[in-house]
Length: 356
Image (cartoon, rainbow, N blue to C red; front, side):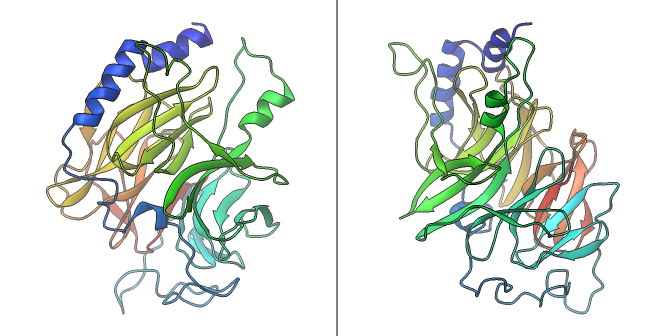
């Protein structure tokens, strides 16, 4: 199948996309994007007013694990191993990984891993976008926050050239980027910057190449976009639009195309780009839903139909078989096919992320 056919199959016909987008805007949902119980999404990774290199108020001193785990006096459960690839950034200087905690020497918020697992990207205590080695060494400020902005939830974009696409350095560099959310004066936009650093971030505006023409696909919102998450091998980026309470997938591998997935927030794309998981409130609790990312089916699955707590901030394992999610008590994991209920694996509270 040609790459062009792949893209057209991925998002369906123009009419199908337009219909899905129209239907998505009128669906009545039980939640909006801010129903996760964690406050407005723009501040999910917002810097807390602390001195550079210090932990956030109420968090333990560098290198300590107390305060980020479970109830007072209870023994903490780590739950991260080299085998399961799970890591947890707690908003302090320490990252939970490989069965221990690693001191990065600076505040780490919203940690994400590069496609090869050799680098971590995160927002530091100054609100800058930083990359580092897995042990916290080799830190590089990829982009310095200009001030007056809140940056959050970076995610490493990735694309593998197709046989019908020239494998040029320019092509690879176009997708060797880190996408993140930037909030300024209460306006949310997605931005991207070269993972190598040295350049100023540019606004990433999701769009449709066939929009703006009679009968064409409506252009997606340019603002209100947050919680970016790259996945797959073709540079796809999932994100949430706060005003619409809608989850989208943006793909400009060949030509720009944006798919409205459905009502929800905090999306994450599977490693192969075939599935998307997102959060939606149901009966007073945040549930995890999965859906095809291909745009060919409206079917979605509630992975947590019997939830008695909130499951938020989901992340896929490298093999696509497991999903980790944050809970009020720590981090739980569950099969991506929903064949079993979530099981607690760690009492450390923070953002789960898998290192490839």
